[in-house]
Length: 328
Image 1 (cartoon, rainbow, N blue to C red):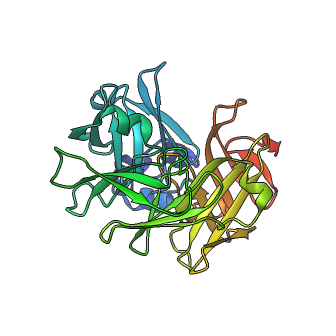
Image 2 (image 1 turned 135 degrees about the vertical axis):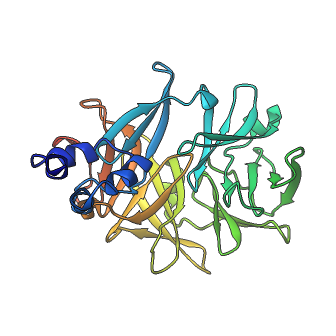
């Protein structure tokens, strides 16, 4: 047993770099020396994981820090990820049927089918609260061009047979972006295509649009990608937005000032790291610490097929592997 407890230096780190989730937990239970190796490993446990489906390989790809591997989940083959939270994926088959899937335990929970209007008219389909909780609900939002209202489709836990559709009116036109809304202070917050903010109180049926949230007039017409998120451990408990500009890779980070409902530019995230995708965006304490003040995008480096991250300090994109960096 001594040989297994104390293998050559570097071997345990190599093993850890290839493990994921439950396997990493079991690794720590082998013996005291393995547990100690896990504690000092440069490969963080419980770090966020980027998931995507490879139609070429017919496998799901997992990227966690510097580890990249594939797994097969027949239950979700050819399905599209609509939203990711709490360790669950909200997915949609090609026939528009929705289901929740947990890739860590391989469990799928079917839900009601989407109608064609919901599927192609709504910009996103986020869910709130875990699907095992009675407070769980799914929404789809659309804001038709030229309309002064927003159409919100809601599916609540226990009502898996029927969507509830409600139209909310406002004196201001608001075209919702493809960024998923965020539940914040008991309200749903949305970001529009010009950086404006809208809030929805589902229980009271109140929809409010703040048309001048983004004071940078030039920026309003140049945004091409939108991400709305909260950062775990943020002392200000604020809402954040990341905007990317047309014909440029410039990354703009903002914090929402309340109750003014104005975006304030952020140049330093401190010890936090932000993870962005259309299915899920959030921030957390950087693991490892060397990744602080960075933003991870679902963009792959063509040189080594690794994810890219953006450093607010260097204002450049970098690859997780190697020394590749790119000008913005």
